[in-house]
Length: 450
Image (cartoon, rainbow, N blue to C red; front, side, top):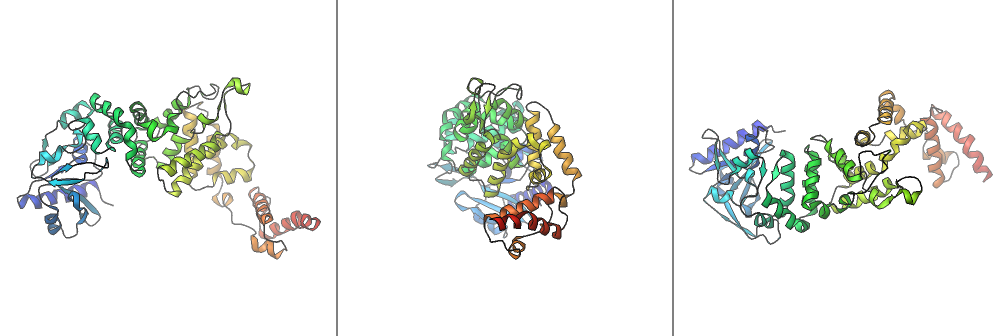
């Protein structure tokens, strides 16, 4: 895996090669911003006057990934740097990509087509890391402001994904969105649907996993974007909860409190499960007057799981991620019963893949409400004290054994195998012979009577 230092070394090597041939070449964008903030950049980009053809000739292992946009990936072992030719963009018919580009000889012209001032800085690594700032990016970093380069409505109209990216950057860095920029986001929020579901999902996932999820989703709400991209989450606002279980307030407050405690680097599926775990509450809400005792959300976990699946399908999640997010939502209420579960039920409960995410979601859920962690501690201790082979033991009998005993294939097979596994998980059956005797005693007799 490449390190930040290896990426920077390659970037400097590319700049030096181009500079020696008489071409301007600078580090640009997020990597410059991050270095000024004392952060380690995730990757490095270069802007240069050199053409894509020349770059490919100079670096034979390079890969042309955007010929029409003048973008080349220069590779060295496991490290890569994106190199783009200075350009200006013409037309954005799809609200995402330029219709065509015009290569330019001007670094300033190239910068002025970019999104936000904090991403519009150039750095010359060959001249003492000299910064070229044509757009006031350094002042906005100092003032902690997200501001578009040039006219906000124009910048957002060119690429509608910038609407969500503005929110993400503001949340990630703890910045304020400049007033005219924010007004443009609110004006254009309904047009975010022109962006592909996959790209919206990627930006939302970054908001959830970069360590400032609560602020990010509050900005999505304030800007009007939340009601467009996740109307099911927006409906949580004002949905009251029983104060004896949720003294913190309504479903939206509770959800934001959970988001606040999501650390940077959290698993995307856990983060989405946290966001959506109570998405079934708005459609299942019943007031105390309706129930005769207290506010209730009957079957909200099961209904929420179906809503979560629909959201995942709409945002083009993978099947595996959809299954995990749905499972987190559907199972989150089962923790209230763990101390009353039979051993077989409890062992089945804790053995799904990635159960650690279920356990962590329960802890987050508790800490954002009544703060009682008894069930969480009970399950955590059970997992720590129970050998894995007792939680997931090898089967003592299988379908072939049942055929040999004279059973016919059908729904009865599942019932018998489940009963055997229950007895095994309860510690009543230790080996294959005991299991076969159990089947003969409990099921052959009933089969004969039938």
